[in-house]
Amino acid sequence: MKRYETLFVIAPNLTEEEVKSTVEKVKGVIENGGGVIDNVDEWGKRRLAYEINDFNEGFYVLINFTSNPELPKELDRVLKISDNVIRHIVIKLD
Image (tube, rainbow, N blue to C red; front, side, top):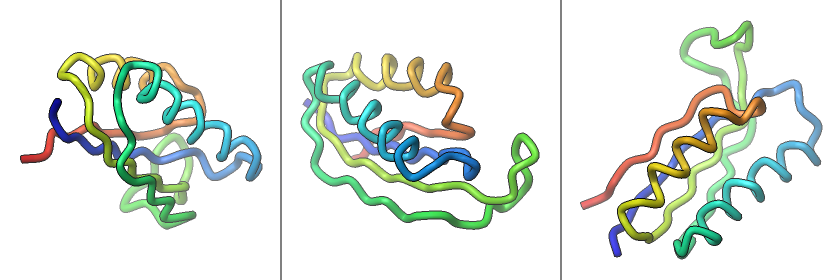
């Protein structure tokens, strides 16, 4: 099992319920894939460094987790097709 973190930005035009359901969806993908979530850090709404899809702001969420090496590929796939997520990255920690 290796340690990973994912940082994703959720579109700012969503309601608080939609933001929470998006975070729960990502957590569900990690847990259903056999991963263990170590920490969930919701940074809240912040200004983006540059405009993405006509948005200047977004909800930032950082999740640290431990999993097998196949799970980050599936998580990346799910985040790519999610309409609510405007940017994401999954990183393996040392």
